[in-house]
Image 1: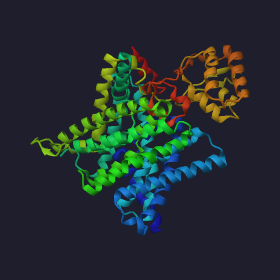
Image 2: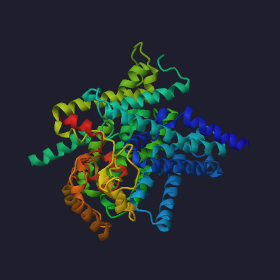
Image 3: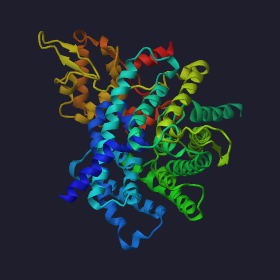
Length: 197
Length: 354
């Protein structure tokens, strides 16, 4: 029960209070991209959530290996990158052989697997000294955070695109950045930090 | 000679300014928003980014042209790791002015989307020389945004410049958080849009952000049996469509086809003639699908109201990296790369043109 509690609490914290995408900008490029391509929303968010959980599940035990635990941060980063690449390549080869998926699908899989959000999860787990269950929760929460961020962005971007009152020079990327900043500000409110001291 | 110089200037101007990887292509936002909290950190990240991008583009242009795309995506991370992690190790050991949080962001440069997109979109399709020019141009564009952001955030967020106390009584600590970066980026992008609108209007449409409504579809009119246009894109009718029917056994082909078009005004003739492009680009299109498409659009064209659909014309293959949306291409298959801009928000684009 404690394990499940750890997992859920960390997942909820990561997804809603400390939304990694909007509060810390991890994977924000991918979230913006998904908001512009609603058709791939479900597939891509599922992929990114899956890889976030898998990378958390593998990297945390690896982190605790006696030969790894004392290594500098930068070498840990190298280990995480290697794990991530390995997971992606194994998944891609299996999908290619067993399900004969298209190269297009695999390319999207690669982008979902190899991005700042998924690579950041093992770092966060290590720095926060999360248990294995909490690490899994962190990965799960990161996936949910991505879904939340992408959904909020998609909704806003569509409204912005229909708004005729936006001045010409603000249309497009300027208003998108400002919209993201408002979302980010909303989640920053949960951080408890003083924003304008 | 003069032409060659102009071409180089063109690549620089487009790569660094007009198609700025951050402000226009919306790539690499994570690193820019999170890491550019002060001038020195921004400078270090810009240098590492340039090294990473140049090496990646060089190797991609030299060796990766024949590898499948899904494999190249992983190789970019491996090369990026090779470039970034030695520097991260050096920074960690020598205590270069990077705080603990920044040290975490440095390795994330290995997976930054700008590098992989430029490798994929340009380097693997062009000779080494041009790829390097593009890599330098995009690095300059990325670095300029990082540095400007770092200067503003440090001065107004910390009241310092490069660590030196300025004696300003301004401490907007919110600017040091990502949302502060997004606000400033919004104004940077606004200035760039103003420049493009005023001085380079020919790039207005190509730099517009568009939402890709890829669910353009035709559905049967249940009353009279004739096909009628459905509302494409958001809120599109999910009923079985003519095109879905056509591609029923070939979902991959349907995906390619719908990605090729987006809502707007097209004619049956447009579709039929452009099908030739699709055939040439996608050998996997089966002849049976091909035949069925032609049959549909030639025989049924007069009964289908195409007014609600608009062609997104495919651009001819170009050697210029900036003619495409790199950001888009990062995630899409080759046929998408041919689109000059993200397909949506057509209103915005049209207004921009006006």
